[in-house]
Amino acid sequence: MKSMQIRRIKQSVLIIGSALLAQSVFASGYHFGTQSVSSQSTANSSAAEAADPSTIFYNPAGLSKLEGTQATINLNIVAPNVKYNDAEAKYPEVQLPNGGTYPQENVSGQTSGKITDDIAFAPHLYASHKLNDQVTLGLGAYVPFGSGTEYDHNSVLRYNLNELGLQTLAIQPTVAYKLNDQHSFAVGLVAQHTKASLRQYANFGPAVVGSLGTTASQIGSGLSQINNGLAQVNAGISQVEAGIAATQAAGGDATALQTQLAGLKAQQAGLLQKQTVLTQQQAAVGSALSNATATSPVGNGAADGYAEVKGDDWGFGYNLAWLWDINERARVGVNYRSKISHTLKGDGEWHLVGQAFNDPALGNTIQQGIRDRGYAAKEDASVKITTPESLSVHGMYQVNPKWNVFGDVTWTRHSRFNTVNLYWGNEKTVLPSASGDTNPDKAGMQSNVTRLTPNWRNTYKVALGASYQYSDPLQLRFGVAYDQSPVKNANYRMSTLPDNDRIWLSLGAKYDISKQHSINVAYSHLFIKNAKANVNGYCGGESAASTGCVSSKTNGSASFKSSADILGLQYTYKF
Image (tube, rainbow, N blue to C red; front, side, top):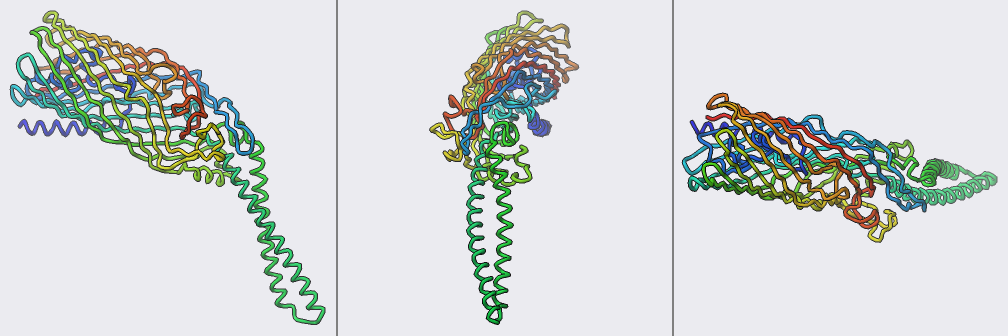
């Protein structure tokens, strides 16, 4: 009977786990702030409590405190509100192949808006089974990390990541061992699936001019060859016509010469037609080149394209925990969660959407010029990321039979998110050269990497909470937490992760319906400090000309106002 119960619990974990992959959630940094409603109700301060199987995430040594077989289902309903305003951005100054300058002028587009969904959902599922007095098994499926932001396609910040999505699912089998009445230990294996997506715009204006310059050279060479051919054909026609006249004057048969003349005139007509087409193209290209500035048809937004990248990977880590009952009223614990490394592999697709690519005369030529520079319609893409390790120290004290107080301090090594390199399958012509020459066709600078340098710092989170047993079935719970942001300052804040320090205020309740059934509810509001981001596409360099990478080299800024509301619902069943 118990084995059948465990199998059903495992099946439920997989079903709920598949749903987790589809969710995007509001995060602190990119760490999702809560994995249990009972913990959420105390602002995640109650890791030492070990009240239900969700202790698998916060301190799995607490499994030794649970009797029999239990399962708990949690659902967080998140209402994030992240808005940006006063945004502005500038193109870099670029020397063009035609001798002109692509000036550093403002990017046009949307300067304010909301970048998060109205509602997001994050379920978590845990189960425990006590084998004997010493050993308890546990299994959890939960969301450890996640983020989801998206700007309008026309945002002025579109060249500095326009969309970012990160979804994770962790499945954790765990074994807890009760050494004695005071000490319990646990170890867990964490299998983590991570899926990421991003969208980033590219300004192909300078490359379009380069493509037109190459096209102009090719057209000129083609016209020269046609003109030489016409001169030879015209000379041949004159010679044959003279031969026909002489033959006819002498009373001879000029049929063969007349056939030859017809062939030469047909050749002449074909060359003249090609000459007309190339002359028209030459005029169109010449006009485009002579007017190639940021406000021309190849300028602000008209030569835009964007890349959509998706990738996923499984990674593995571990969880170690210890719980110490100092006496009947006091308990402390330590929980360590390891880093998990991922190499996300997938596809990158380049879409050419600006009006220049749909120009009736030159659109196909311009598109091919961009494709020839390495921006394929579809190519391989990969990125390595490491989700950070964390160390938590927490405690619980029973003041009296009605009151318990909780505390938790968690350190997270967010500095793992320092430099992120997105590798493309194809080498691409990019701006600028290592010498600072920003003419891609002159310098021939090549790269296959887009580099982000958030340079995050390690952080602390401090939480305090309490529970009050109002009556036999009803327990009231509340807590407050300070969660430090990993972002050092505005110069390192990403527009798609506009994180800042935050305060959690939480309250909730637990109600025991019967000995087997109980429910938890919780509500949290996150007060997030206003933030500003100074963004650029310099790939870690000090200026647009300091390094070469796949980027449009724009720079800009925006202000952010953020908050979030989280509603939690939990049901626990004791078999």
